[in-house]
Amino acid sequence: MNNMMDKLIQKIKETNNPTIIGLDPRYEQIPECIKSKYEESLEGVAKSIIEFNKRIIDAIKDIIPAVKPQIAFYEKYGIEGMKAFEETCKYAKKQGMIVVADIKRGDIGTTAQSYSDAFLGRSKIGKKEEAIFDVDFVTLNPYMGIDSIKPFIEDCKKYNKGVFILAKTSNPSSKDMQDLKLETGEKVFEKVAKLIETWGKDQIGEYGYSSISAVVGATHREELKDIRKLAPHTFFLIPGYGAQGGKAEDIALGFDKNGIGGIVNASRSLINAYSSEMWKQKFTEDEFEKATRSEALRMKEELNQAIRDHINKY
Image (cartoon, rainbow, N blue to C red; front, side, top):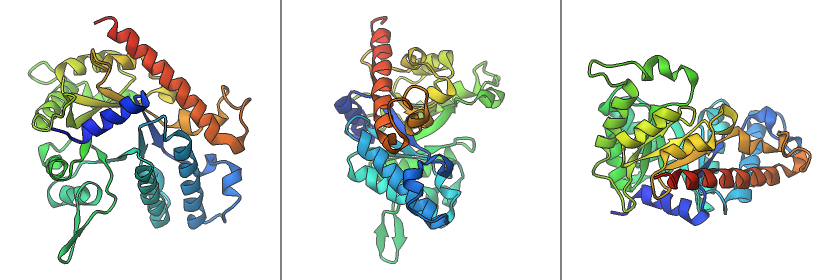
């Protein structure tokens, strides 16, 4: 079975890079060389975001396999912001990148189906069906159980798409709920990981991973290691690297003996690399995309070295 996860893994292999870049643009941090072109209005903000994102994508499309736009950074600018989200997703796909829409939906019934129609499936317009955002993956919140996940799973099967379901998130307070112990003795995140593994069992591809996948934070070393054992066919989207403090050697614990099993997100550390101490001496603000590319290559080597060291311990 060749599924969307196989496509993602193949892109990771082609680029030799298990990185996904988070396109989370903050207007105040977009370089003046872009903002100065447009008026200070919602439409101008959207145009600034689109140009910023396209220049980032053009700079890294040959070395990073996937992008992850977080929808909140677009929704905050209303309809114009959502136009920027849509154009960003379409442009990234056109450049051959895998697109993960970070939307964290988690409702039930026809509401869940409508969300899935918008991002993974099709929306009916009279006798026609039309793809709307048409991304490759979305992120989901499983708090309401299988009722909130099932419509997306069905569309994954029908349209060859994928999902990443929150299991153990990278934020410090995740422990307040996700680490609670159940009567069985297992923690909530462990139970969720097992459920995700079960939900995805009939969508396992050629590389041994399902398109029904999990979000597991880089900031939780032991949990990452445990979930890899609990869910051997579940691919991980791993946030928390860089600005949140996740280390490459810890992240490597989420990968299998073949060096696959996860993709690591970096947002601020990549798109704002031009303002970091490491790169601001070398690149001007006008060269922000060069700084992003340089940081992406540095991250790629760091991750790959950590994964190689991890494999050698098997």
